[in-house]
Length: 162
Image 1 (tube, rainbow, N blue to C red):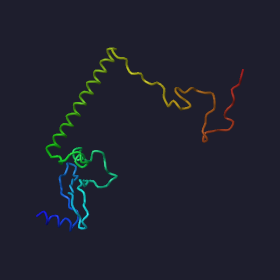
Image 2: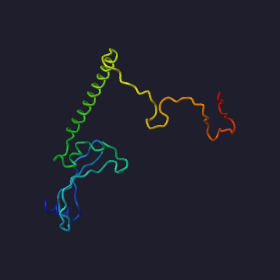
Image 3: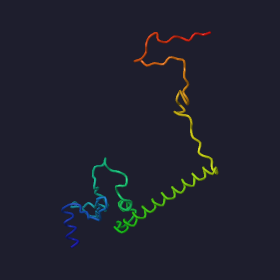
Image 4: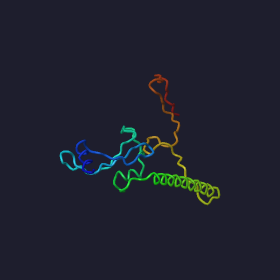
């Protein structure tokens, strides 16, 4: 049977076998090492057929980590459904624990600030950027200011010096 299958593969091109589908709809394939009808050896490869094939709509995380490891050859066997579900629940638990720890840390910081155990962080009073020509508080000047639309010739008079 394998001789017939390999003859059919050589005749009709490269055959790929479906390995699995993830929860996002991406389909994963394995192309075994085989010879083409010309006798050329084609190496085995792993590939993904994206659920959303347009490249510009690709977002990070559209391929699960377990499938990405299989595609890149970091693992021999494709992930099972049970493994994917277990890892996803583990990641959710870690996120919840991290959120709890962050909330406890913020509450502890607030308590320490109230009790005076820790100095409150210094706040920057200066506005703007250090390379700006006018930095910090603006002072009222006696110099005329106007824009091209509101300028009236002769409307400004120099201050008299005493």
